[in-house]
Length: 174
Image 1: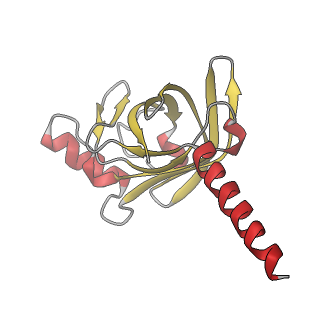
Image 2: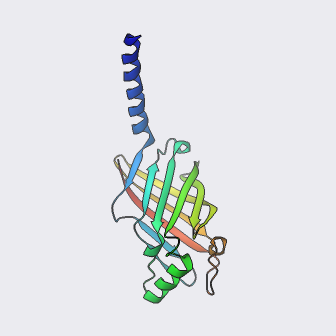
Image 3: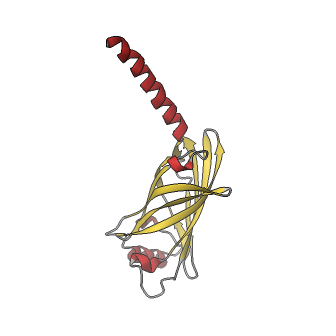
């Protein structure tokens, strides 16, 4: 019995190592990601994106993506609009905006991450359409999606019907 344990242990370690390499764990490059939003009346950015990303573009169905950003980092270029946006997002009570992918699929030359977006304490389905440029130990995710603020209880006077989100996320292999 002892003779069988050692080869089984070695086989398990090799399989786990291969799986770790295969899944493509990516780490966001510090302070290089960009999260931009645009709408008819208000445009700006968020900063400090954090994410756990396991992605291999040859096997997107095995991807695991979870990302969050501090709602209080919203910046519009004008302090009054910043305060208005933070208030509308409920940043004091709901500090984090979060996306968790439930599936990732290939879509032509790009990918779709279908998941759940949580903002202002409300969780709704969302799909992020993205591309991934892989440079072996580095890469860049670029994605877009649309948010309807009223779906998340953001319905103050002047709130746009929709907001377009654009993501640029440089990563390194971890």
